[in-house]
Length: 317
Image (cartoon, rainbow, N blue to C red; front, side, top):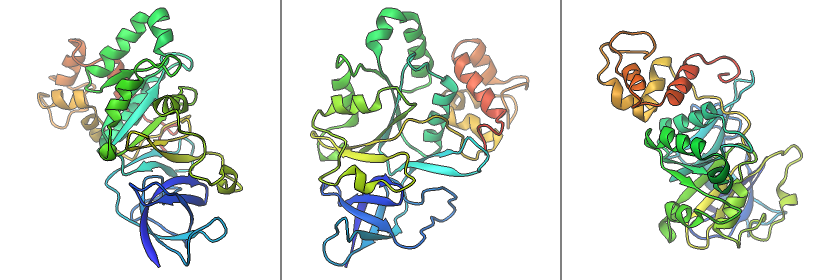
């Protein structure tokens, strides 16, 4: 027999599927080699993918279903390897929104890293919201830095939600942003290690735990698995995907002249540039450079753009 389901967990070569919006995960493995058209990613099947599967009898740990096909994605978040392997990795697919969790300090934020994630969301059409966690510390100790962060990203058009997983501040606002009811959709939580993604998820829904259904994590971890991508159902409706902490985020393949198109604040200004195309670096009559000088585009974001133009092998395989 055959069926269709959504990938809700990826642990190496093992998966859990569920026929969303029903939440009843069951195990599955890949049948043969599945390759997506035009993709060179290390994982042809990612959490959030809609897949076709086969099974004989009821799927179980000893007799898992077989994934035989992957449906076309409406979008996906992908990162390039930051080493020289030239490989890419799909973080999650078919997303309604990405929540990028950051902290000003502990760990200290790297704005170019955040900007790379935001740019990739723009490339693949994923609405993005920034979640600034641990604000119980920053409001007291770093109020000026907190105000600067809001200035940089809200002026670029990105919502910024302040949260504290410790005190519960902002959790209700975040829950409302995710959406309620069965139309809450699928949202991704991602960011660097140590920013508190898992703590925020547990604050959003205290009923969540490290297991999916009744299937032990130990059964899902492949021999060489070092990280897990997992979807959780929220008690108020909708689903969230938790991803391992990221240590690097290499850009997708973009031509240099395309990068500025995915900075929303630059896109709005560049229509007034004297020359087309314009790299926004040295050309006279550049409206983007003028907007930076006038403070309408933050210098921090512009510096991230310049860094992307000068991509080296550390960030572009």
